Length: 234
Ligand SMILES: *Cc1c(COP(=O)(O)O)cnc(C)c1O
Image (cartoon, rainbow, N blue to C red; front, side, top):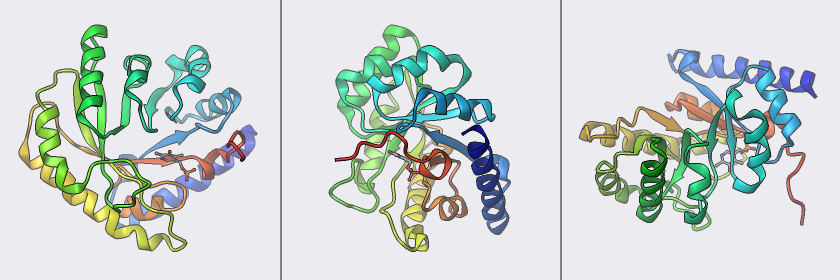
């Protein structure tokens, strides 16, 4: 398994470099969030052993053993839909939340941040594609939302996040990523407190190269890196 992960990382890094080159970017600006939400603790450990430090997880109950064993070896990213009643288990353990999509959630993160005296980097999740199945704010709601969260001490808006629809031709995702980038520029230009918005979390196994060409700084890779050993089958 270790060997397979090592080979996947080498292949991914080559593709990151090529996409960076095409878009005049420095590959060091692009960080891989290794999504191990469908992986065992052993796989997460193998990923860390290969030198990737950003780990993405989406189920609070599944990640507890991983945090107990490996917590201080990685930087943990909560990437899934976050229920308000789970916030107390996320704040303080995850340095990043990629799915901030409503004020009630922001208030809860703020509340627990204050209690635990820890700031959390949050990406505002935006539903750029407008698909009903997807979480996230509408693009036109984003600026008002960030104005609201900028009053909160324990939330840093580090950027915006989106999920593009799956396209058999990844090129078709490009307008989605372009739109997120434009919105990021608007947020940045407001220069609000606690909202530097320097990052863009976009791109997954199927479309990460297009996302890099459009400015991604965090790409979230699961399947292409570690497969889906625990994916629930129905
Ligand atoms: C599962 C998941 C990923 C990883 O998807 P792959 O297509 O397996 O790379 C990325 N982002 C989010 C929000 C996810 O839930």
